[in-house]
Image (cartoon, rainbow over all chains, first blue to last red; front, side, top):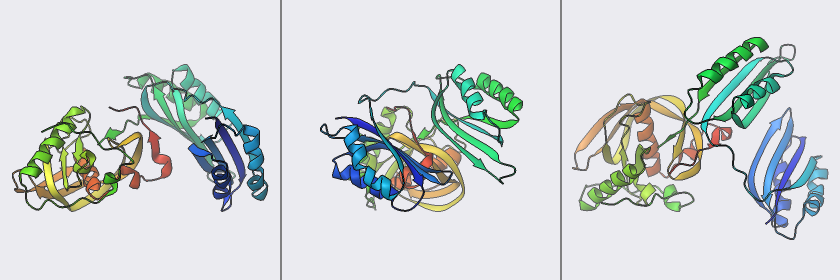
Length: 178
Length: 166
């Protein structure tokens, strides 16, 4: 069963999800994981669908052209690996970074995380506050090698945050299984 | 007494309100023993409600002994027909559930709770629980009303994949 990654972005308005998923239903596709949110006023969808073997990416993209035109969406369909690639295992941590907006915050922070062996599993950023004094907020879920205290990473993050003039925190996000 | 399979989504028994016990008899005591045994079979498990072993009966077991987030700790206790007498001070924390594989979520729960129920001896018991023990009690109570943590997450983006838990 082929898997496709479908991405679509367009000015937010009611009906986008229903229109796009209607095409999936018509073509026998099954929604797997998806993430949809509003980014700077645009509704952004990232969807992984299981498709019937007879359907290829071009055909699905062509079928999606109807809702794409109706809702003015920038849309793409790409085939992806059928296997579910494993993420590196480890302990779950949250990282929060926020402060005056400036270029390169995401790059610097994630470069540090990568160098420390942290794997980013979720990241969202928002520019908030008044236009003349924008505040940049970034929230990350990361996994770190099991059993660590996070102290070394915290010290390095603090040093980087100081250099960038932003605030930064790191805390474990282990869930309690009840 | 036996370790029973833990019921997981999408089993409909998890979404059904459970029936009251009324009087603690032999069947209820056997259920309590199975709840304890099944909880003990998973070392990290701090509580289990009867619907999670397939019985839509108002009963749960909790034991937060040794948990780093616990303040009050009444050890292992089973309650039948539990009811909350008072609950204050909601705090958001991340939860997972034996019956909901793969996901965790941030849930607001009261941290100061007084709960009443019947023990395995059929005796009325009132417990004042706080912090993590309160969270565990409220989580298990929700099971008796057919509610999962997914029904209470503070926002959809506070639902997360979790490590494989066995």
